[in-house]
Length: 456
Image (cartoon, rainbow, N blue to C red; front, side, top):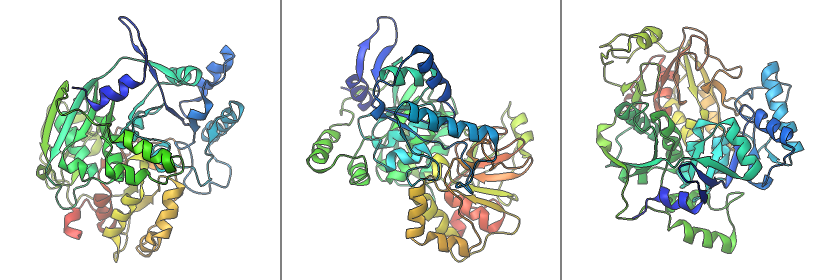
């Protein structure tokens, strides 16, 4: 009667503290440049080394520029954070995927694509979107900097066990409806706090039919519903994706691993603390209209009228009852740990092929890793995009958040495939509409918010 979450969690319990948290063993710690410096300083003050350095991977991504990565970073704060991570990794003997190397990229893109994130693992990082790695069938969640230090020192963490929720999406997704649209739909239904305190398992026909890239997108956005994390039971799609990847098991070890991974599923009679079911056919391409990811509508719908949303609508320059189709777009951003994978670039290219970028639109197309950039080139997508007037930038978090040079100017409207649309998230005064790569592409070639189904 166990859920998959119970099985993975219980297998990693070192000890249960009476009337206290669980001491949980961690299989993989990812470190980036923003949330790790104080953790390393804490180890130095205590005279400690990392307990299991081979299970820690460091990678800069938030502050990396998406152009001229072979040159020194111009912003002094970003440069200091990136250089500090490299020094800390070297001092503590940790794996470091440096900027402008083939292994680098956004940490939540690189982890799965390198086979560092595997089914049955516990995975943490000082970043809320660590939930992404749950797509491979792992229990993955974000932690604070003091907890990063805990894991470095002991390979364990103190955690209260979350409650379990299963979200089932029955049926098949319609035309131009992507996993990003599914996530935006769920956020609107549950609100941004509707899954607070829960770890979410996604299930149902629509989820089973998602590619690995789509599952990574869905799990990435679990945190935007308030969930501690989200994950999907591993299956043949998972195994096919991981097979042959750099850090995945090889030979006989691979077969033994798959045999174990096949057992990672919730029992038929498992009891969840909460169960929700939705129909895939109720979901159309989605966009947001406010300043949190839960303020979203179907692309053909009108902005609802709710008390308490006046400030958000004033910031966005929208009105209740207004349809956003036809609204002028200034910027388009394709990328982030949400939608910076090869499938996202294929989708974007499928819309812009044979068309031209609209005049007046600034488009930032940013792969999630150097491996994704190479695949874009290998598949000839770069030629398609360049023929349409688009430029592909170098990998990094880019315009997902205003920690690097890719900032949207104040007042400008950006259709973004990233994960958050808070005030100032993409730059002071920037206005963000979250959407899928297909919807972003439709806006990029029309210059206005457009229904991608009309261009397919």
